Length: 272
Length: 272
Image (cartoon, rainbow over all chains, first blue to last red; front, side, top):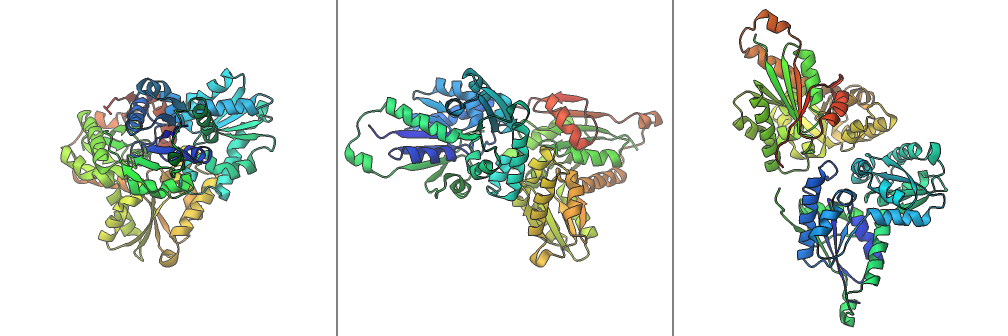
């Protein structure tokens, strides 16, 4: 199959966990990542503004050669997937449906606990996607988890205490026996060790980042662009990054999310 | 003295702690508060963008009758005080100088610990203001404290633990004996009980919000507009709020910062 170029878009750094999962699952591909770091967070903005920003960024990726777009941002997926699809001429994959689909495959008692940011939970995008698949969902906004990840306290006693408080509020009443914890935020994969310790033993952790990478791999298997010459298949993965705020800051903070050094970052100036 | 109308500006809710201090110190006045909640946080934006937003908001306050402007936002004070002054025809008071001045009055050994958000600390506005007054300063960004206040965990064991970790990192080495802890963020007055418990006994807590209210009171004493008729002085305080995001959300979240119910909120649409 021809070597694909995959464009990954997020408002900031969180989408790098999706890119990390993609790199593990689909190493023979090239990647372009766009982080709209000057205009984050999207969570506090109107649907109209989020759609405008997301379309600008994804158009930029398409113009730079992306043949498939991954919206690695829960807010943009929840608020702007349709406008992005309308503006694109390549396949577009968001993070919500893959996460919900995977939760549906894993859950036996059809009860899922979803955690995410205030904006994602407030959109009820996961609730709708889960209910469409015949699952009951309880949603819980966990606004402190992103700041804790960004402070670098990914395996810290404070983070464990905060996560325990949040999860106790969701695994309770009718949902004490929910058998899936769905991570509805691209920052949360970094907290998996902590979340595994504090979540009930019987609950499987489903990660939207990994689930999205699996859907992308599936999409490429189903619609392989064409056969690539052998030498092209063996070339090392090309990784390029675009950031609307400081490139230096992107390099420094991004490495933590990607789990490897970030080199080729280009500053992009999209108009306010 | 004529009843003044004081315009208070912040990117969000934090400035309400300054308004609260003003209401206690200067009850015979009318107040207009502008919260640019649709465009917060300012901390991640460029100086140019912050100045543009801040000038728009303060012009709005002046057009609605403000005879004195209080920039109750550390980022806007640090990045945009001069452009705001240039655009205004009334006196403008920021939060940085009053806090630094009060710290200077209180400190005996001339060593001050300053805490604030990443943006405020990164601007070094407090460092410069303190050094100008012959004080040594150590700055510490505390990015988790604002999210903790916004989660409502103002007197919570997690918050106490986080504050203890941050303060241990600032009151150390040459600064173990610093005798002032300067709160360089308008969210932090809500954390005063916790901060008093975890700060060293010998350190006085100086609050930019209170210090700013004192400077405003002083300014009004020095430049009283004129004598008001007695019946005007006895009229209850007029309090109006303008917010660029949802008025309902402003009412709900704002009450926590102001310490009293918020009623008269008007949604304002400033262009993106």
